[in-house]
Each structure stands twice: as C-alpha cells, then as structure tokens.
Image (cartoon, rainbow, N blue to C red):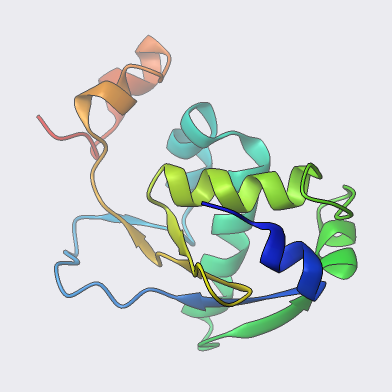
Length: 138
C-alpha cells in the first residue's frame, strides 16, 4: 500500500479499530505484555507507536491528529519523507495486522486489542518468550 498520501498531507489521523471479533483474551495494546511480545515481531518503533496509541485509547481518546514532525519528535526520529522511520513504521503496523492504513486519507487505525499471534509470527519470538506467551494460537 502506498503511504505517499500521508507524507504529502504532512499529518496522520490515528484512531482505534472497532473489531467485532475482539475477545477479552486478546493482547491489550496499552499493556506491558505488548512491549514484551510485539517488539521481536514488529520492531521497537512500531511497538512503541501501537502501545502509545493504545494508552491514549484506554484513557478515553477516540482519535488524534498528529503532525508528522511532532509525532516523529515524540519517538526521537525523523518524520520527513516516505522512507523516514516513522512513515515506514505505519506501513509495517499495517502489514503485521496491528493497524490498518486508509488508502485514500492520511489515517491509520490501530487495534486497541491485538489478536493472538499465529504460530508463524510466534516463531520470531525468542524461546523464553514463546514459552511464556499466552497470546499464541496453539
């Protein structure tokens, strides 16, 4: 999916995904478990973005408009251009199912609850995390 429309807009609207299949046993984006189990799979920056937005959603916010430069500063990175770590992270969040990019608008929907990890994704976890992770499809 192209992310150039986000770069061209200079901002992104981030809101939660309302998933009708969501289960209480899913991994909360606002939890420390997300930091433990998602980082080896989607990387540290993507995990921090999903976690931070999960915390906002858990506090009652239902969307937020972010200037790309300011959002990049939040995480100590550059947000300029389609190859910036921030914009590439939006694409990665989409590819790994932790969120969904809007193809037409500068919008990223992030899951407040992450579905269980497939066995294939769980293989990316170090052994000690695989042994303790309650969020793997068994």
